Length: 339
Image (tube, rainbow, N blue to C red; front, side, top):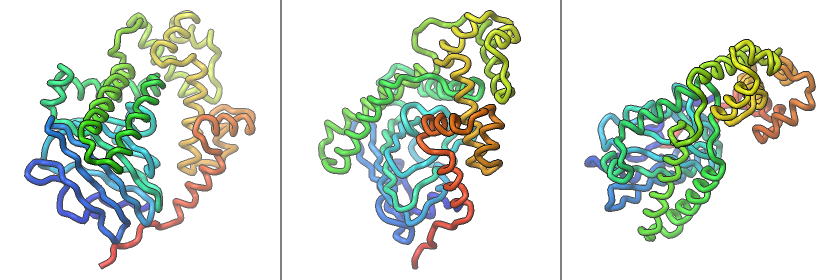
């Protein structure tokens, strides 16, 4: 896997000037397009479009500039990005790779992009005081909520968000992207869509973090559900039955099922199915074992059933994933920039 720093791709010196975000081009030796095209609004909100294509694929290392405006960035990805890596487990606040970045909150480390494929992202940048005025919440509360969500992600897997909110974000994002690219002077429409995207993301964040009003599991049961998750992750190859799992963590069967549904949005063995497939994907992607070994390692006794489940969960056959990772590990993709 080839890795390159974002600053090497920049055709200008900085993404910021005089404390403001600015548009920058892509070094022509690496590809075509713009790394940052900025549409500012008088409200203190800006839309930032990334629309570029690289000659190769690999990891683009991301970094924040040491000085510049401390903005909250509501990130939306539409194409060209396979993966975004963080220092700690991160729950995406919406479909695809939708997320929120903020100074003082662990930023993304790198993104993995595809060769000769338009990388298109749209970022709503909002100054903290604007966020506080619009929401009535401090920016510190936002950071704390994001940190809480990440902490829970490491303990209990993927929380259950709202599919309808994901869909609404996707539709709103495409409308804003289309307007930005084809009718950038439609200021009123673009600003309205930017605010709508922010509102949808914050609503999804509240739901994922468990800060929206809803029926809560009794506190002492929560830790036992976390313990049950840990048992299933550690013993996924030969897991206990539901009744035995409930007995081992000290609750009854109904409490176990109710707890999983309210905390994770899944039944216990729907959760087990998810962690098995995610573990198998990691084993195959990292080339730690072949497909058959991966299936049996996580507890699947039928290779055909494993393949169907894998394709349904990730949209790709395990063989295709294994072949893709093998090709990546033996190829060099980025061209050296021209003079």
